[in-house]
Amino acid sequence: MRERLIDTLDSVGKPTELYRSPDGTQVLVLPYGGRVLGLFAPGSDENFYWTNAALESPDSARQFYASDQWHNSGGDRTWLSPEVDLFFPNFPRLDTYFQQRSLDPGNYQVVRSADGFKLVNRLTVNLSRLKEDVELEITKSIGPAPNPLRHERGIDLGNVQYAGYTQYTSLDLLKGDPQGKAQIGLWNLVQMPHPGDLVVPTYSRAEPNIYFGTVGTIGTEDTVISDRLFRYRMRQQGEHKLAIRAAVTTGRVGYIYQTGDKWALIIRNFWVNPSGEYIDVPWKETDYFGYSTQACNINSGLGQFNELEYHIPAIGCGTGCARCDDEAQVWAFRGDKGAVERVARILLSPEV
Image 1 (cartoon, rainbow, N blue to C red):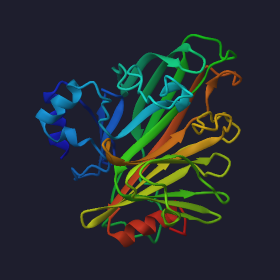
Image 2 (image 1 turned 90 degrees about the vertical axis):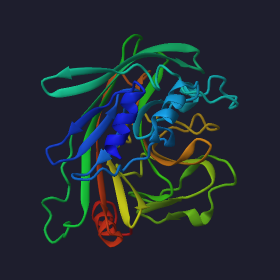
Image 3 (image 1 turned 180 degrees about the horizontal axis):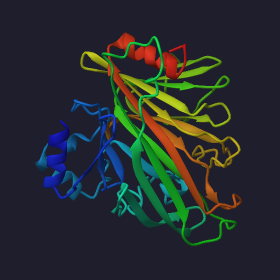
């Protein structure tokens, strides 16, 4: 699967970069779109991430990239918030949703050094409510993330595959006054196979805000909420999105799904700062700030995948900052259901 994906992308003029971690993890990076497209455990060519079905053959990939639709290749990507400013050009009207092409796919350049490589995208985006252009630079690089359970005793992980990496992301405001009107934030998200269960440990009871839902709503049986855990069974038809507030989230989110006769667990470990300015807001409550963690269920014409999303506090207006830096890990496990659930109970919550 890995080599076929690399060959297909090469054949359509979308070359990849392969990062090899000291533990044997392989991370497939697609500069087009600035994405981590594949995550592979040592000795395995099975991808933990979702990739677009169009990438299964050179012919379909060529047609996909030649089209004027959004080129959602899959994997782990970086967007910007607030969504209402960056993706709704006619806001408050919601009739048009558009990915500004300067952001995605952007124009990421591979910059090499003695330490490896990084991706750099210099871009200008328009904020619809301010009717203002903002010049920015996004920089991304990959490093190792050893198994967080490697030194724990009494845990048998002999039959559990592991892959992990650290992603370093920065955002610079190139022109403009950080005390001016514009605020903008980094928004990182992983796309994973559908269906699956999102597991969010919390410090207290978390009541999600449903941003949108098509083809019905998220049923009460699809969400399980306790004082220390939120679980979302992401299996709906259509498109749905919900969000949880920074004040209650711990900075770890997991996603569990079945893959053949095995089960997989993807965990994102990130920093949450409730004192920061989390500026992504519900589309109809644009003064309701403070959401750090989001989930998006897609089972529609866009494909079949689920998204684990987190936001980084904004720079610009009122923050005094013209730059932010983020460091976050992805830990991925694959094995028997019981073993994967044991890992989840250790790294996420005993309630899993």
